[in-house]
Image (cartoon, rainbow, N blue to C red; front, side, top):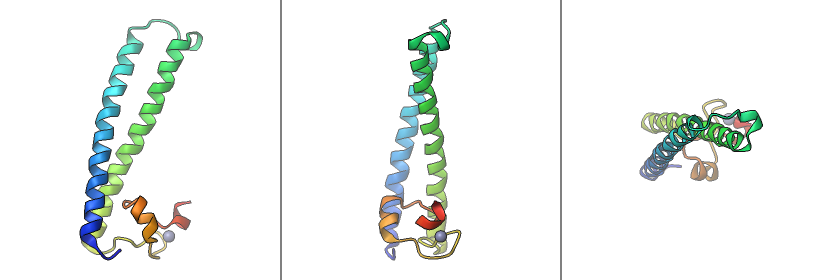
Amino acid sequence: MADSDRVRELLHAEDAATRRLIATLSSDIKDLSAAREGDNSDDEHDPEGSTLAFERSQADTLLRQSEERLIAIAEAEQRLERGTFGICTLCGNPIPEVRLEIRPYAPTCVACAS
Ligand SMILES: [Zn+2]
């Protein structure tokens, strides 16, 4: 991927989308916590409570993944500045463009990621 302006654009778009997602998830988690606090019943025996707990843990997982993605995006921007963008950070082989189109922040090639 030689066009660094295009890469920068992709990374910025991904960064903005991830920040929006984090804002949404954070407010969801706050709502879910509030809903659970208003409910004194035992999660284990209350279907409503366990649904809330499940939703909460899913939101937590998504939030963690989103925060990790923000870091990955920042690191990809650094690689772009250093001129090492598009090169697998593990094996040093070029990362296929199709992969970078989907995940411009991917630090490794497909083989190293799996
Ligand atoms: Zn690799």
